[in-house]
Image (cartoon, rainbow, N blue to C red):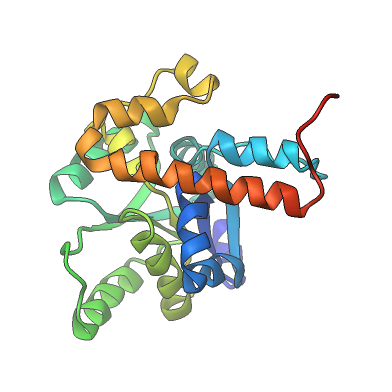
Length: 232
């Protein structure tokens, strides 16, 4: 079945959370990226809460990126999906590939690539694209951090015509290199706080400043759409 779909139009897929919204509010080009030909999934409970406050129909429900990543690897086996992993360090990619193969026997990881942390030159990007194309993947998972991974997912689709998913911290969680929040913490919407405690130096700006920006954007959005706080 996967092979019969390879001629279909490819999409760049993004897991949108509070940080994504705060970045898009400050950067029109990034906002355009997320609205032009992309598929956006509501990663993070604040997005689902905003949908409820706006009384959207249908209401948005959280699609957690790390779980989506694992679910596609699981279900994809029956469709012979071919996966390419782009991002992180070589060591993490080895651990990630081993963990996925152990958890989902028969999954097809056809290639991995750990780009340099700096911006790549045009020739380096062309060589990277050539290596990816040679593996004939059905899906490219991009774990380069937000917003870099979102731009790269869009570029890959336009250059290679292969569906690409900007998947965030899924590589770190699935490989076991970063501790994941317990289920009960995720269920009460405090995964961000857990991650901040685990990686404070890396994430303090994202969660403390980014969350404040998201709240300001969300309140303005709710107001513009006719909702006012008050008694039920």
